[in-house]
Length: 136
Image (tube, rainbow, N blue to C red):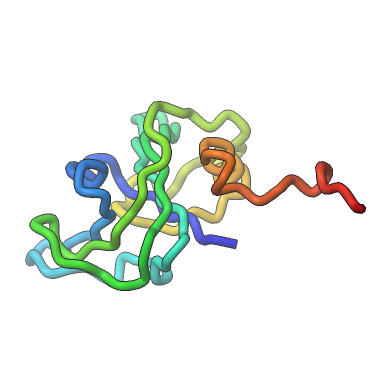
């Protein structure tokens, strides 16, 4: 199963237009790889998020990482991404406070949020549902 990574909307300007996701920078301008909980890999799911002052999560875009190998762009060190969904989705089935809303980049472990993101993916990116499997 792919890992899920949330990216702060304010730090994501240009990601969709350039089909990338870029690593955050530390205050001194260097790429801050320590902010990444675990490495983002090919076929991982990334999403651009916005959090309100009430700490409610808004999903703005969902993409699939296309390579393990970073590229350089005018936005910094980035990975190519195919953005497959854009819009505004507020997950409704979450029962916890979003303590990571303030983080620029984080790995999403909340199963309810992961399910909401998977539901936004086009069918070709989803696994077949277990209950719909037919045995011949």
